[in-house]
Image (cartoon, rainbow, N blue to C red; front, side, top):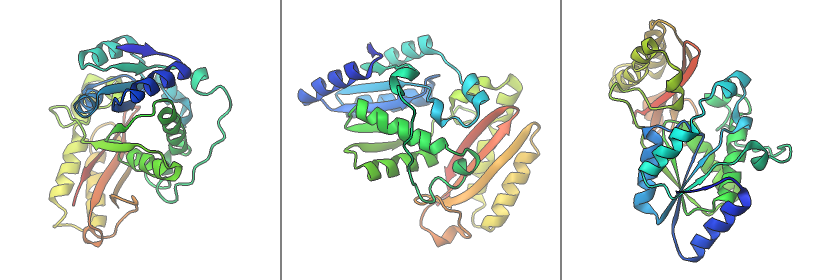
Length: 280
């Protein structure tokens, strides 16, 4: 695996591969890799000649400085994991390489970034859009792979690509879960053993909501789910929403749009966890 730390060398290397008519797959990450990330790379390997991963903990998408400080950094083991699945190129820049100047770009995503994550993490999605646009400029891939655990982020990336007219195909990939049902996340490493035993109840609650969509109204489903999670020791729900899958706006009825998804964010102790499940 070739490891590159500079923008200029990465662009030169990828463009040379494209000149040889190689197809390029790209998996942007913030490191602390787990099986979910590796599944994205495995799919990229199947669908492309060359697979590129980036590891960059993006400071401008953290609205909580403590969250940035505590975000796990495991570069040595990350490299070993990438090599184990045959990743071809790792782009691993420092912050001053990515942001030599102050960031001033402001995106307008309409209502997409005003709900759920956007409501509770002001500025988060602008930071995501800025770094993903920059990464797509640095790694001009044919296909980019994103997990559906970050459902709202995926919608934001798609909208940014549309606005910027970037010639890249965004490939959504299913959530990868532990045997317990817990969605794989780099943040899971911060959970205690006791919290790890409790955390799967988030998914179990989502799954129960899916089974109750013909029994209860949307308002009743949300109330039931929040009540269930609040009975879990140490868990505090930040939001539980049922939204349409395109504009991510809350729905009053499961039947008013073709496709809906239930999304949740909850603190378990000091660790913030998110998850979702498609309902219809």
